[in-house]
Length: 148
Image 1: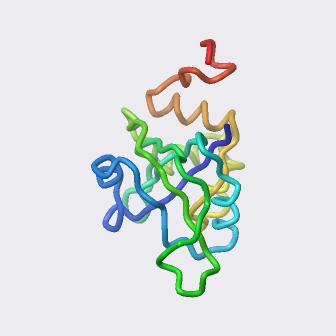
Image 2: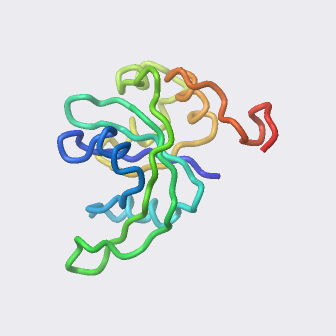
């Protein structure tokens, strides 16, 4: 399973919107690097849901339930989207400021490429951010101390 981070302006699409909808497509991405990251996503991959703009914090986790397919909002036909389902909120949102303060997270694209809306998150950073957000180890993930 790979891990990701996806950004959304809460005034456009918020964590609460995602939870209410349950499963929804992630459309509107028009950056080639972000689009390529979505092309690499597989069913079961998980992503941090990040509120951008004024909030700048990770607020929840979503899971890929449909892999990359054409984005109906793209008239050019060059870009696609994936479908996510809401998995769980972070009990304690993890702010960008907190992430920037932690040397162990300084390599993240969230820090180094601040305008990238879909970016990978390595396993160690995923575990650390989950911990900072009050979630602890993932259940059913190899290496978390529990059987899958």
